[in-house]
Amino acid sequence: METSLSINRRVFLAGTSAFALAPHLAAKKHADKPNVIILWTDEQRADTMAVYGNQSIHAPNLNRLASESVMFQNAYVSQPVCTPSRSTVMTGLWPHASGCTANNIPLPLDIPCYPQLVNDPDYRTGYFGKWHLGDEIFPQHGFEEWESMEDGYRSYYRDFRDKDAKSGYWHYLQDLGYKPDSGGYYSRGFAARLRLEHCKPKFLERKACDFIRRHRDEPFILSVNFLEPHMPFYGPLNEEHSPEQIDLPLNHNDPLEENEPLRYRLLREHYRQNGFEGHDLMSQKGWRRLICNYWGLVTQVDVSVGAILKLVEDLDLTDNTIVVYTSDHGDMMGSHQLLAKTVMYQESVQVPLLMRAPGVKPHVVRRPVSHIDLVPTLLSLVNYSIPSTLPGCSLAPLIRGENPDADPVFIEWNPAQRKSSASIPGVSDEEVERVNQAYTRTVVSPDGWKLCLSDNDKCQLFNLHDDPGETTNLFDDRRHRDVISRLTSKIHAWQESVDDVVDIG
Image (cartoon, rainbow, N blue to C red; front, top):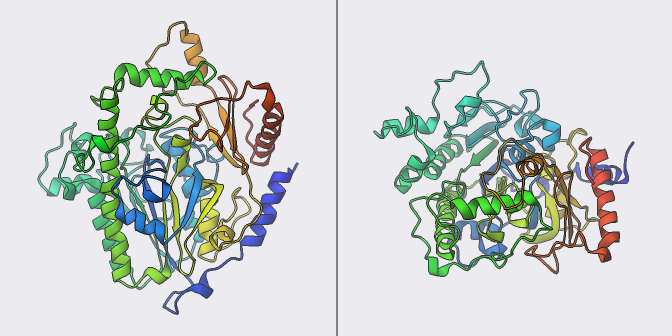
């Protein structure tokens, strides 16, 4: 049965699928087939550049890109952890639909990614950097050129893959004379401690620039996927920012009361009890040092993004190139005294999203949008039809500055096997196991409400207008029963429309 939600999105999609940028493009060769550059980071929360409110972090190239782009102020991932989120950005499918519901589940070979959906032999295609969707170092899913840099996923390769093969970055370090530090391989910690010119962002920068130079006279689709600012939170620009510059998040001291999810409270205790990478996370000094390092990694990415975009400008390709910048999820980085991702708080699920398109005036889109809409948007921007199998819709009207009716955004959490090693007095092992296996479905409504429904843990309700730091869970407040009922219906309608069979709420 079709719900009103699915019907509305299909109508919206039909109205946008014919959108084309060709009338705005300069009269150049392949003007009807613009280039696409997708720049991703890993674990970059939204407030790491000036346009998202951080005036202190050193990111001049990202700030410039933002000033030239449509900036989506409230962009959300499909699931706040690497593999599921990446599967959505590449395929336009929800994690539960692609099967990539947890890290290290390979994307099925028969599910097409964006270049395969374009399916145009005129386009040259390249994927450079972290993949984390299976068979890490091997070209696949419609990308002709492949530059890999992560050897740590080799135990997850499919049986027909060569388990002894090495990444491009491994060979690069070998040629520079570095000796592997970990059983014949280079660990992430080793790579993070190299000089700037030999770290992963510069490696990707050089490979991306070479690809662009070679294909400057052909339409191309290039995805550049930085690991940074993902852990290890260490790099050559650790001292780029001073700890005295760091203001801890306003919700840093939120106590996470007992009406908050138990899994989140266990994670908080884990970081308090164990610290992270030698940082004492029971002290403000430890948090400030860690945040400084994290900011330095963002600056490191900024340097390489700047070099790639400068080459696009120098080669006179700007007027025929779409640039997208985003991340696969955020990082709590001290908010609620939590670290990393996997939770439904804003810092984990909200990411930067910038789109620079020829002929499109820069502006800010404040309504919530989702990564589920990226593939339909990119298909429409290069003038290709959007398959009816994709649940998302094109953001092209918003990019054009139009103001169609706003839809809610949905986020899912599907549990993995990883368990917390922390303990809380009075919490049994059985309770810990129960919440570690809990599913969550979240809706963010255009009017600023956020409801997180869980099957085996505490549910949450936040008014993001009044409480942007999410410090007061209103789910048990009887005054908001109507809001909870309305948003629960939204979640159930969405689940029905996308064949999500998890029994929530």
